[in-house]
Length: 119
Image 1 (cartoon, rainbow, N blue to C red):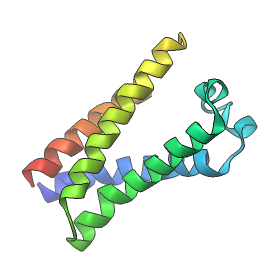
Image 2 (tube, rainbow, N blue to C red):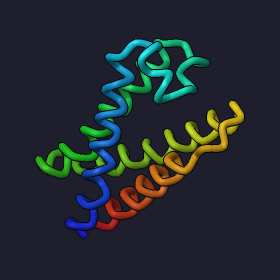
Image 3 (cartoon, one colour):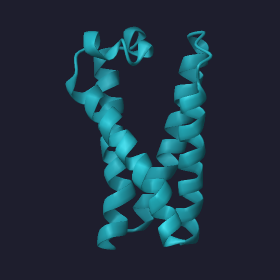
Image 4 (cartoon, rainbow, N blue to C red):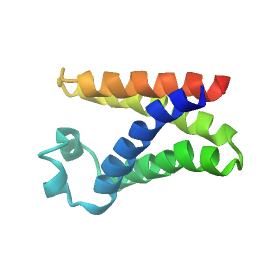
């Protein structure tokens, strides 16, 4: 199960590291073309989401690599499931029906939760 964990958790962590990093460092004007929802959120909230995503990405990878508190990988994956539930709600509330990426991330995080729990 360890290989399966890395097959799902690795790309998930890279995605959130990249996306979260962008939210932390880019201006609103540079984020809006990629993430329309940013326009309706205060920038401190966008930055906070970015920090959570970066920390969650580290939480998927570092505990499993180091063997220190490996249960935190399960917590990070669970956090990404919750994050995507919120993201889907925000998109639907804004009238944006393009949630395929969010559903894919939700499913990947859910599989990662399962793999972290059984391995």
